[in-house]
Image (tube, rainbow, N blue to C red):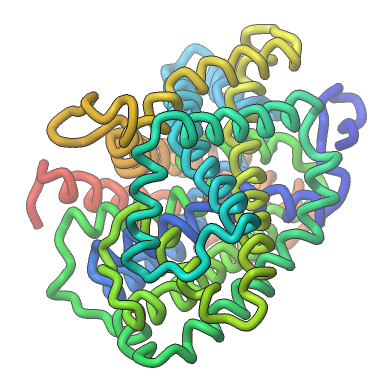
Length: 454
Ligand code: PFF
């Protein structure tokens, strides 16, 4: 990162740097681990349809709104609202965002830890000769274990903090440039192998053939939450990253590239997973274990699987890492700019606090299995409430802020780079951000929680 002249703040140094960092944040376990299993639990093709509709009608709008807020304020998530709306309660949206980042990171890093365990297992050939059932048992046994899930989780938190502490991009920008395309290549190879398994067609039908009778109002809310989560929006991550974007970079094209890339990877993950799920006779609603049970099964049936498996889990861990650093950055930027801490102190304090909460998430099937509320463990509670409640509420207020509070002139100046871009889509954006996005989010949210009935 370099400094914006005169501002004293860091900024991305290139167009590619912005896309790499934003796509790095967006593409992660949400696409490869979470999308397949929530789609599996919520109706397959019909869920995919809703997810795509939400990305287009709401996701893109919220993402551009976050960039507009972040770049015009040049501040962290809380500071941005304090600066743009002084003396008004809008900063509470920022506080909610920082809290969401905190809670999401706590359970997300636990799953990232699982990828490290699976990397280890693939190196020591731990999947060899195991049937799909045995792979399922292996996953359960690992997760219920006492030390391992916790240890890997803590290692992942240390990795995340050690990158954030040194001011983000330098190393990560360089590596993501190579590693993300490589992840894509492996995912394509995996999809091809999965598609050529006997009985694969049923999986494709499950993923692409919408059966709307399976859609409940809860599933609609879950699809919205997944769309927001996957794009890293609704909690101010992209307000924070937006504040590092230079004034002459084009916000709208960045939003489009990142949304397309993110959606493509999620669908590709579905194409890799579902044919194999049906071919191996795994339950498509196998919850958080789905990917960790299915993929090792595919690797076993592949020539060169023992090389592809470790490579894949390294890349998955890296994809997770480029997401966890963006979450931690939300909290750290807030601590640094609003609470006036040094970057070092802010990183250490926030990482330690998040790790404490994360211990309960990582140990949700082991040490802390008895800590439950209404039948949900800590991991499940964090996973459901942050994504399906905090992100939609955050997204709602973010579009309201840009649509109704910021003023048309300020928004126009930001998306047209002070008039130097034509930004003809502006009229459509204004319509979506003022009416469609907030109304759609409100309806889906209230309906999904059973507060109103459609
Ligand atoms: N978008 C990330 C993923 O799909 O894995 C998850 C994520 C990252 C959510 C950053 C929120 C965030 F701020």
